Length: 471
Ligand code: NAD
Image 1 (cartoon, helix red, strand yellow):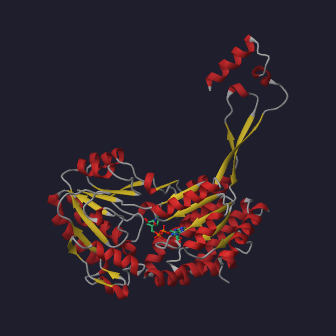
Image 2 (cartoon, rainbow, N blue to C red):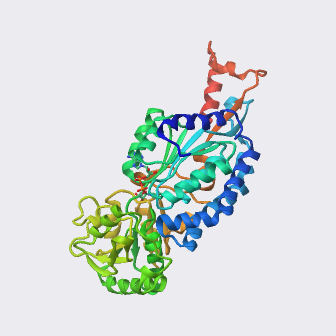
Image 3 (tube, rainbow, N blue to C red):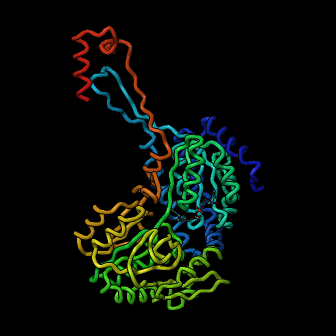
C-alpha cells in the first residue's frame, strides 16, 4: 500500500524503533544488509532495467554501466573494507594526560533520510544507502516522483528485501518531502537542485540535523588538445549526451580558443555519429528528456544560439537530438551572461562551445562564479592541467575524460560551495554517516590529574604547563 502523508510520522518512528533496538549495529547485520541490497539489485535486474527505460528511455547497457553496476561496485568495495572500518582504532593521548588510553569508535548516527532526484534514480537512491547501512544506521528513502516506475519498484522491493524494517520507502513529491522534513532525522542526504537543497537545509536546521547536499551547477570543460582531438571529442560528447545530458556531472559547456572551435565542432559531429548514429532518435542507446516541462525549457534554450549540430526535436517523444551550439558576442558565464544557456544549469543534451582568448581567461571565467561540481580538462600540457588544479575550485577535476570519477568508489564524491557540501562513496560515506567517538580512560590510580587541580603549587603547575605546551 502506498504511504500517505498521514503515515509519515509512523514510518519514521518505526525506522527509529529498529535503530534504537540495536538490531542494525553488529558488523554481521551490516554486511547482511549490504548483501540484501545486492540480492535486490541482482535478482531484479530486468525489472530495474525496464523501470529505467520507462522513466528515461535508458538502454539496458546504460542502466547497467551508469547505475546498477556502480551501486554493486560500491557494495563490493564496502563489504571488502567493512571489517577494517568497524574496528576501533587506538587514539593518541598526549603526555600530559599519561597514564591514559584512548580509542576511536565509529558509531552509527541513527535514522538517515535519503532524498533522490530523477536522473539516476537507482544510483542516487541506493548509492548513499550503501554507506548509510554499512555505518549501522536505518534509513528512510524518498525516491523522485519524476521517475515513477523506479520509485514504484523501490517501494515494492525494499520491504521484501529488508524484512527487518531497517529501510523504508516513502514515495511522493513536494508535499510528502515537506512532511518528511518536519520529522527529526539524524542525517539527511539530499541530491538535487540548489533551490531545494536550501529548503532541505533550512528544515534540517530546526532539528540541528547534519546534511550532505549533493547539488548541481555548470560543470565546465576546457579543450586545447589538438593532437588528440578525435579521442577528446568522443569522450566529451559521451560525457555530455549520456542520459540525454541529464547528468549532474555532465560537462555543461566547453571553453576553448576561437581558432579551435571549427575543428572541435567537426570532431563532435563525427563522435556523435559514431556513438548514436546519424539519426540518434533511432538509436536504442540515446535517452529522452524526462518530461515536457524540461523539454520545453531545453528547446527554448536554443533560441538565439547558433545551432551547429543537432537541434531536431519532437515533443511527443520528448526527443532532443545531441545538440551543439555556439554563441556570438562576449563569453560571460554566470548570472550576468547575455544568454540563459550560459546563465543556468543546462541539464539536457545541449552543449555550448564558448570561445575565450586564452586559458587564463577560461580560469577567470570559472573562478568568477559558483564553484562547479566537476571540471574537465582536455589538454596535453601539464602546465595547463596544473593551472586548473591549482587556480580553480570544484568538487573534482578530471583530465582527459568526463563522468568517470563517479565510478571510483575509493574517491570522495561531492561538491564544494554552491555545488554541495559533504561527500560520500566508500570510506567517505563511512565518515559522513558515522560519528567518530573518542573513548578515553584515565585510570584512577597514579592520579597525575592532581597537578591540574587547585590548590596550584608552582612546581606542579610549571610541570603541567610545560607538558601541555608540547601538545
Ligand atoms: P530537485 O531538487 O527538483 O528534486 C530532488 C528531490 O527533492 C526530489 O525527490 C523531489 O521530490 C524533492 N523536492 C522537489 N521540490 C521540493 C520542495 N519544494 N520541497 C521539498 N522537496 C522537494 O532536483 P531534480 O530535478 O530531481 O534533479 C536535478 C538537479 O539535481 C540538478 O540540479 C542536478 O545537477 C542535481 N543533481 C545532483 C547530483 C549530485 O550528485 N551532485 C546528482 C544528480 C542530480
